[in-house]
Length: 253
Image 1: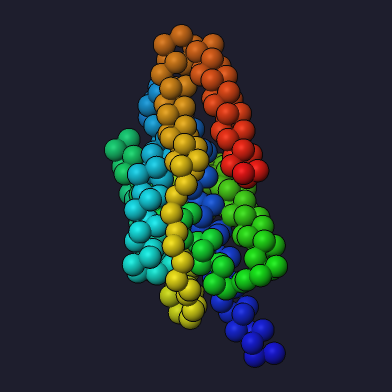
Image 2 (image 1 turned 120 degrees about the vertical axis):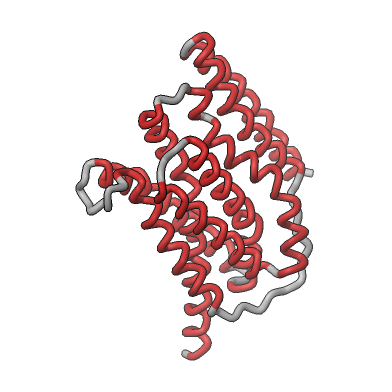
């Protein structure tokens, strides 16, 4: 009974970190609101989601090196702290530069978390239970992604007390959750195993595509309208098919 309670005490903070990982998906809904508030062009607005992939592309490999030095738990804690500050910035305004800084920090925090959280979970759950735990983690992450648009809409329509922030009320709400995750995880003892971690070439290929295509779609839409954006999207689909075929080839080798 005591061991089961200890397991739950370690499991819950990690699952809350998966919820915090889903905060990065608020970039999509936030980009639409920022575009409307600041009257941005498509190419300007599409910089926001590209920032997330850009910083993941830059930090994925260094994060693996950092994690081997300071440990998985400390890397996840660092990612939560960076995520917390990224969510605090929009409370003070929604200027273009401020939102760029916020989404950049959100992308950096997510890069740190994506690289270190799954390995940390493997120190809490092992064996046959790991696959189901990873699936549950992705489900918890999806809940945060699912809630973000509704919280933004509720804030924009004053359905909930928005403290004058409007749709930006979702940032302080998620910031509180990130802070709770920091407190819970920092107070949880997790024994870590030494294991080399790195980013594969296929992962970097995927991140590279995720960085470029939103920007290209925005530029094409500004230049020739939605036809240009659809053309870029078609190229993106072909790129995704090649990427998927490469993954299947690697798995069969």
